[in-house]
Image 1 (cartoon, rainbow, N blue to C red):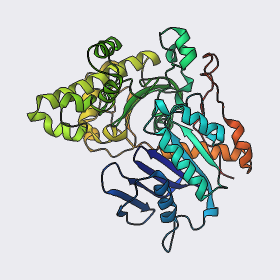
Image 2: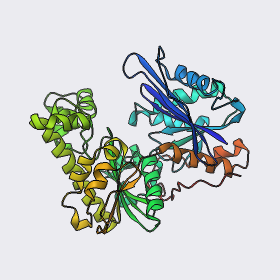
Image 3: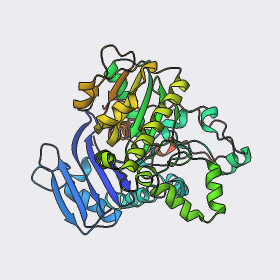
Image 4: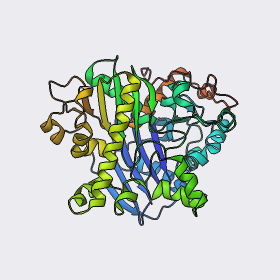
Length: 428
């Protein structure tokens, strides 16, 4: 059972082809036209990576090129299109969907309705879905949602303290994001520690960043909210700020577009430092740049603050997970975040932290709580979701469409009570 996983960005398309039964990676890569010229990376299992400059600047053309490359060469990753069991997509905002679903016209309409809340990703995903429909019209397509893992939040955690009429009318709930990553790390952490009864705090620290609190595999709280803008300080996003300050800015010269652009693209590490959104460059610049040092200090402060809040939600912490670009690759940030965290039972092993390669435990033998560095695999979470759907359909793709749990938010009752599972069924 081969499943192609697609992850569409505003100006990019990442992919991986996996053998779903044993979760082995057959090929992976990306086409990225964020900067010119467009770059292609294709890496087949056991082969050297191929890098090429392209003229592609559309998701439809990128999808077509990926299918060509998967079938190219003397030992192609995909010998025949008939080998493909499904194409699964990462969807950033799934709104009321609580688990992966097969793509139907109604599912596409829902993703389009949610596009204003994820304008860089949901429209791009729809373009790739349409392209795949043209290339392999009989192959089932599946959507896996970054928001689904967080649908287990209680109403106390998910409802905002605004007039409830607003909540009903506009669905103003804490959706949370990076759920595919948080789901994978919760499962992988339990595997590494050989325990299921865990209170886990997961710090997904990339250009976008979020922190979640997970008990026994179930998400209890998360830092991102109605949009990916809420929460901790990020590469170019502000994270949580005083809403009164935003009202003040709107009344004193900024318009809505200025505010949107400033908070999403000109804030965070870039906004404070004035030079870089990338943590590696900031760490290098910090010794001679007070603004870069301030940005790092603020970043660490916000992360520590949020970890403390999440530990209160869980009533303690058994495990802290670092993942994504900064979390996986910056020992200095990990050390600073864990500094003076002995009240939560954290004691890092300095050598392990400095020299680890994910997946690794970087805590000392004396530490009561474990600290893990995990290389996130959103594609595996997506494949497990797709495999579960395909197995449940017993070979009939037409049955998959009934698995959507779409609801309009006339009220919030019952929307958040579905327990999400990230475990796939066995291949048969």
